[in-house]
Length: 129
Image (cartoon, helix red, strand yellow):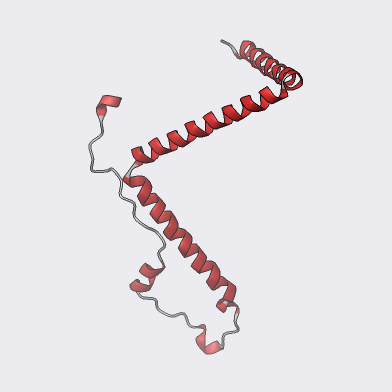
């Protein structure tokens, strides 16, 4: 169907739904509230089941991601706490203006990233394609 035909149909369906909602509100308000509560409960149940199934399907990758996200948030909290003290805003005597040489170990300690194992070595399931 072309866009010219679909757009008026969508507007007509939305208009009829609004008319039905208003009609139900004036004729049977308690029935409307009950219907809305039942719909919300069913939607919450479906969302809960989909999330459970998706976490089982994601498996190890999801848990690795959550672990890395927690570690990253802890690092951000440490950085924000150190910024509150603001040691870099102090007046430094001219003797200390020479930059220090940093070792490789210092760089490794400051790195907030975590490696998440992927599926690079695993074979793809070609039956789904």
